[in-house]
Image 1 (cartoon, rainbow, N blue to C red):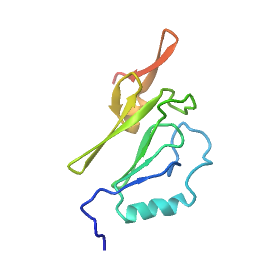
Image 2: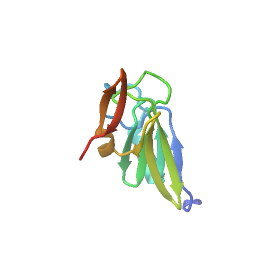
Image 3: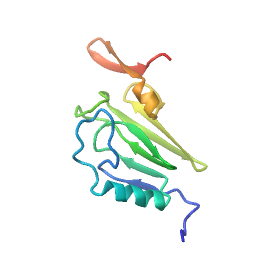
Image 4: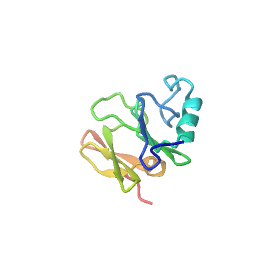
Length: 133
């Protein structure tokens, strides 16, 4: 049935497939997102890359990872007020996603880690760091 079972399946969207915390009312999701999500899962997609909300986040739906990007060069940010980008590394079929805050640290792109980033104010500039455990 699937000719390329041994290959990684990566799908990209501009708009988001699943709502993201801290971003306000949902009005720009993909039309028929539930059907799209079911299609992705039933066809064994591995990763969805998207980023319309400028809010880094990671959802997992079964084996499917939905990776939302932040924004590297804008001040139109929601819920996470630092410019950032994602680093997605695929090695031997293993997918690793990290968040890189521009000019700062690289952290694991997981909801637990993202929720632990706390703002620090230094000399009129906002910076984020991991909160102590």
